[in-house]
Image 1 (cartoon, rainbow, N blue to C red):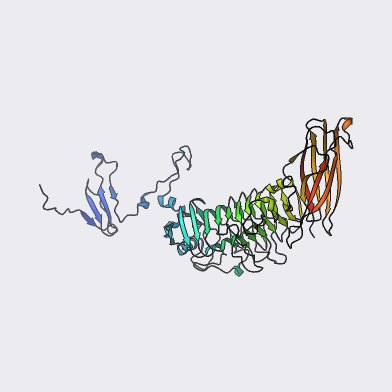
Image 2: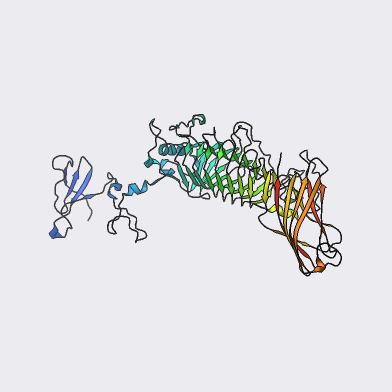
Length: 561
């Protein structure tokens, strides 16, 4: 039977906030509160089976569902007690739970790789971490995490980061920030207002940027610029960041300007005075690649730590103190447990700075030569630049590992000089022993070679043994090299203990005892200071049996004046 007419259903109606409000309704009876736009139904009596007498509110589109979600409590794992008793867990509303952090998508960012999200991201940061009045005091409750969901976010200008900002992505392989111009991210002081970053010269110790956290982001810069610029920033953490530019091997390396900012740099650290410093920042598991310069730090850059980071395919790795600011120099910074692979110039160049440390880092294919066709040569046999360069005597390399070290005992007759691992004022000792198998030669043979560009001292700690003849020798060879003026002069001494039969005493012509040294000058054809290699030679007397193992590690002391 077709329905031809629907009768109008009448229900109680009135105002909730007038008189006695919503009355007790009969079982199943409906009532509509006109003023509050709420709908109720009567529970019914206890005799009918109702759990309680009263009215039940029915949700409509006018209701805020979060006001009814007051029962969220942490329940995983079950044995966790959040309240005073196991039966009284802490209950929070769903709105409170969701507001523990906020997604950038809540401000309109799509992460679709098409939208220009510059203004949206800046608005989100300003609203969360800047005051909305002139007090410049941000309440702690508003300093929640700003989360970047997986996606690609395009920015066309600088995003300014104030104090207490906590910006977390889904991971450096999931959340990508694509920047097409200028500096991608830059820190600013607490005088910044919504839509108006404060000028750097207004920074003091009390208002400088501090306590920020940046993590889980992939910053991709498609043009010359700066990936992350820390101006007067302290006490902050940067973790799981990938910061890449568009520089490739074989391109020219931009010069760091004597004043002003560089235009092709992954991370720039700078400050305005000895009082307002960029200090106590920690960079962990960050990847920097595709820049003329990976990191540039000038002025009072103090007590910063770079740990477990990767530096790859860079014109130069880390540069400290290129710009001259009188007494303001980078000091007490640590670079540890990092990897430097495919760096055209130096991996670490401390032009000015004191008490900076390179510790337990790994260096491979650093400082290699561009050939006649301007092609990058991925072979350390043609290295032109040192791996590390120290200008001041109190910077230190501790247990660093250089793959270039193997060139000491390989390519002994190469026409290309052996460029030192650490140039300038350097004092370091190899982390691992190397081994050379010495064959039976009656004439002196090249055993290993050392860089000879500086006035310096080498101490070779060694242990020798023969696989057939019963002798052992442990000692310390000291080599003092005077590089200037040419010709080169060398002084050596050998202090040792010898174990074996009387037939193999020191001086016996039947034993490998004759270790000689010579310095061979090799001009590398540049206008720079000429480089030469210092060769350690050995020869074996007639009648020697078997091969001799020569295990060694080298300690270097050099003062560059």
